[in-house]
Length: 432
Image 1 (cartoon, one colour):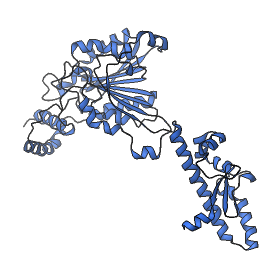
Image 2 (cartoon, one colour; image 1 turned 180 degrees about the horizontal axis):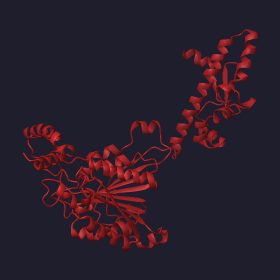
Image 3 (cartoon, rainbow, N blue to C red; image 1 turned 90 degrees about the vertical axis):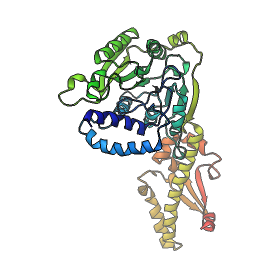
C-alpha cells in the first residue's frame, strides 16, 4: 500500500474514532452535514450502519497505519488542539469577558475556555441541536464548584440557530470565534456572514480559521476538498482577499497567521489551517447598538448554566461563614492546647498568660492589639471578630469589618455584645 493511501485512510479512521457519526451541520442550512473539529478539519459524518466487525478491523488497521503515518505528515499536538490553543492564547492576551463560539459543535472549545478566569459569559451557536446536547453536560458546574465557588461569575449558554440569522442574544461580545466554519457555508450564507458577525454582532475581536487549500497537495487522497461538506477551500490569497475586504467594509484591521506548519522545504504552501484575527478599529457606542439592532429573537436556547460565584451574596455568605468558623476553630484549638498544657497550677497559669501574650507571633503577628486576643471565660472561649477579620482570606472575602458582621449575623454564635465568636467548652467535652 502506498504511503499516500496510508495517510488518507488513517485520517478517515481517526476522524471516525474521535467523533461518533452524526448528521446535521454546525452552521448553515438545517439538514446539511455538520462541522466537526478534527486534526485536519474534516468531520465525522459517516453512516451509522458501520458494522461492529468492520469497526474492529479498523482499530487493528489504525495501529498498523500509525507507525507508517508518522513518517509522512504528523501534527504534534494534533491540529485541532493547536487551533484551540491559539484561541486560548488570544484570550489570555486580550482578557475578554464575553466570548461566543460560532459552530461550537461538541462544545470542546467552550469547555476549554470555561477555565479562563477572565471570561464571565460563554455562548455557543450551532445549527445541530443534537450535537450540542450530547456534550453540553460537560459545561455544567461540578460539585466542587459549589463547595468552592469562584470569585468570578460565569454563565454558559448554548443556542440552536444559523449564523446567517441575527439574534440579539449575540450582542455585546468581546470575542467571537469561528473555527473551521466558513468553508461549510453555502454561497448565500457566506454573503450574509460578514454582516451578521462584523456588522450586527460587532465584537471587539473576531477569529476565523479555515483550511488552506495550498496545503492539500501534502495531504494524500485529498482530491478536491478535505471533506465532502466543504463548499470551498481557499488559497492564502483568496482568504486574505476576502478578509481584507470584509475588514475594510466594517472598520476592522486583520492580521494573518495559522497553525500546522508545513514540512521543511515546503514553507511556500503556508499553514495547514490559515487564521485571520480581526480587531475592531473604533469602539461601538451604546446608542448605535440600540438604534440599529433588531430585537427579535430567532435562536432557541438549548442549555444554560450559571456557575456559583462569590459575587452572589448567597454563596459569599456561605463561604464567609465557613471560613470564620474554620479560622475560629483553629484559634480555639491553639488556645485550649496551651491551656491544657499549663493546667490549674498558679505558677503554670502565669506561664500560660505569658504564652498568650505571644499568641500573635504564632499567627504571623496578625493579632497586634490586646483587645484582639482570644480568651477563656468560664466554660466559654471568646475569639474576637477583629482577630478573625485580620486573617487574609476572611479579609479578602468580606472587604470591610461591617460586611463581615452583616454576613455572619444570626449564623454564627456571638458574644452578647457581638464582638466575638463564642464556643462552649462543655459542649465540646460532651461530644468528645
